[in-house]
Length: 157
Image (tube, rainbow, N blue to C red; front, side, top):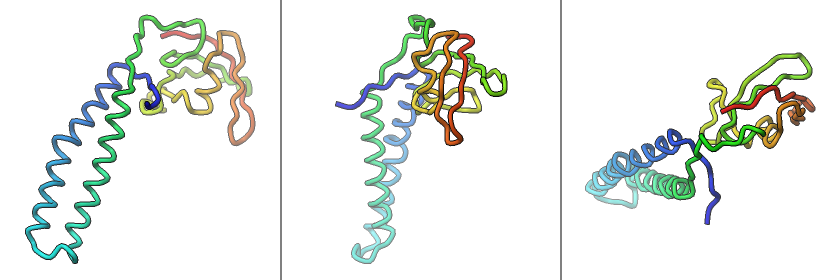
């Protein structure tokens, strides 16, 4: 029994596409490489064969890990999200208490985080600090340089 993880529909579709790519494209390609290397004769000194077998092992591990993630994935119904406090998929506007700078982040699962797009992981230091906070509250976030304080200005979807 793995850990449940929550995804947007788009995020889950991306994972399924990645899995299909591995199963339908990469897996047959590696099998072909193994067969070609095997046809070359002596397997005991065949580096191509060893490399292909190792690649196959790594691919099968990635496939089974991704299958587990997908089987434990739950889609978040964005219309039912509570905006009274910061939760996964909340869009949180925060103000840095030290310099007065305002930023807006969307809290997402680790695999969907993308800082450039303003999506931060709920397991990142800032994400953890914001989770469960309400508008007007101060989130104290531990960073390597010490503690940063962010005031929660607004929470939306």
